[in-house]
Image (cartoon, rainbow, N blue to C red; front, side):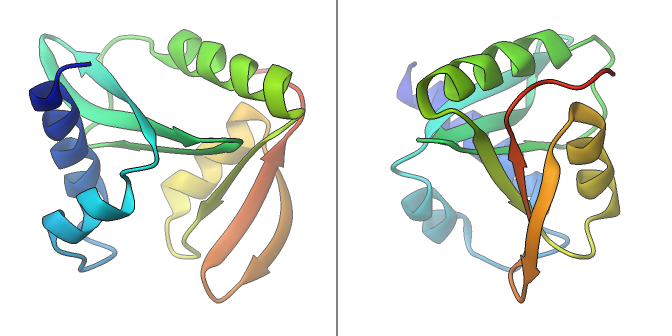
Amino acid sequence: MKDNTRIEALRALHKSIERRITIPFEEFVEHLKPFEIHPIHDRGEIIGAVGTNGSEIHVGVTRTPEGAHIGELRSILSKIIMRYESATTSVMHDNLPGLAFCRRIGFEETHRDERGVHFELKEFGND
């Protein structure tokens, strides 16, 4: 992926969480250096990204995509599960749409702590 595409995807990902956390963009980019970034395109623009690092996955979008993107996400998740036997993620306690999305995809809650709600996905549920 070109550097400018990665930065554009990271900007969209950062924008998707800026209401919940106050981390400067430069620090955000540094924190995500080990992550593989998969841009989410919709109607010709990058509206978010899927970030993966080992079995860990995070998704963020600036708006609800008009097209169906679940197939792309499932493809990424399938590769993670095949390699690591499960995919993991965490969501902040107050991110109700994020919590609902994880449950809808089939993630199961493993535990909660001060950082949020932690999930694991070993196989796909039904949409």
